[in-house]
Image 1 (spheres, rainbow, N blue to C red):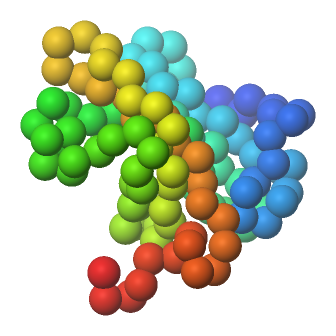
Image 2: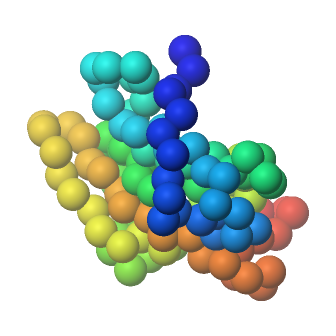
Image 3: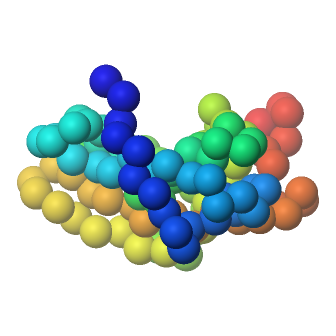
Length: 111
């Protein structure tokens, strides 16, 4: 299911600086059933996560903590974990901010 286009006048892509972004909001009702919230850039076609949902088991295995680093190996990007919020019995929301810079943002190929 395609997410609706939601114009973001104040949101710019952290990777290329373009204002042509599309927000995909988290939610189980409405036009999308995404568990994570992110936005995509039309200029560079990259995904930037704002928050990701994890189960209690994933939290224990991933050792996530506020102030730590979250790695998205699929897109080879790293994020600063700004906040962790427990919602419900078995769900945590990890709030993320992208780490920009060639030495910090890219995950080494062997990782």
